[in-house]
Length: 266
Ligand code: F6R
Image (cartoon, rainbow, N blue to C red; front, top):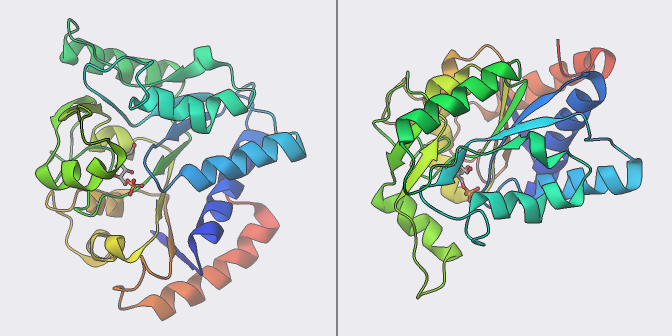
C-alpha cells in the first residue's frame, strides 16, 4: 500500500486528479471507476478545470460508478446518477453512453442487475483506476462491515451509522433510501489500481484500521491490503491516528523521485 500524507483536502484532490489525468492521457481506452460522496467532489472540480483550461480530453473514457441507491429514478436529485452528472459528466466531454452505474429499479431483479454490471465491466476490459472514499465505519462502496471479502456487485442494506452519516444530504421531509446496489469487495480488488481518498479527522480511525489493522470484514477497506497497487491519499487530519506517519512521509518522498521520472503507472 502506498500511503501519501498531504497537508489539506485540496492537495489530496490535486494529487488524485494527477493520477486520473495521467491515466486518460496515456491509455487509448481508459476505464475509470468513480465514487460519489463529499470527498471526491474536489477531485471532480479539478478534472473539470483540467478539461476547461488544459483541454484534457475525456471522449475516450468509459466509467463505472461504485454504487447507486436501490429503486431511485436517475432524475431524482439524490440519485448518484444525478450527482455524477452535476459534478462531472455534464461538465466534461465524456460520452455519457459510456458511463455506467449499478442501477436496480423496483421491478428489476438485483441479482440479474448485479451480474449484468459485472459483465459490462469485463466487456470494457476491467477497471484501470478505481477511485474510492471510505466510510467512518470502514466501508468502501457500500460494502458495510461484515460484507464478504469476496463479494461482487449486489444489493446491500445500509447500516444505521451510514444512514446517519449521509442524512446531512437529505432534507427533513425527503425519503432516504436504505438499500443500495454496490460493487463488491472482489469487484473493487479486480481494478488494476485503486486510489482511496480520505480527508478529515472523522475518518482517522477507519483509515488506521484499513492500513494497520488486521485484514477483516469488520473494516471492509482493510481488504485493500491484498491489492497489488493500492494508493491511499490522506490529509493530515485523516492520517492523524497512524503511528508510522514518519515512515510514510519519507517513503513517499522517495517514491516521488521515481514517479517524476517514470510516471505513476507501471
Ligand atoms: C460513494 C461510496 C462511499 C463513500 C463513503 C465516504 O460512492 O461508495 O463508500 O465513498 O461513504 O463518503 P464521504 O466522501 O461523503 O465521506
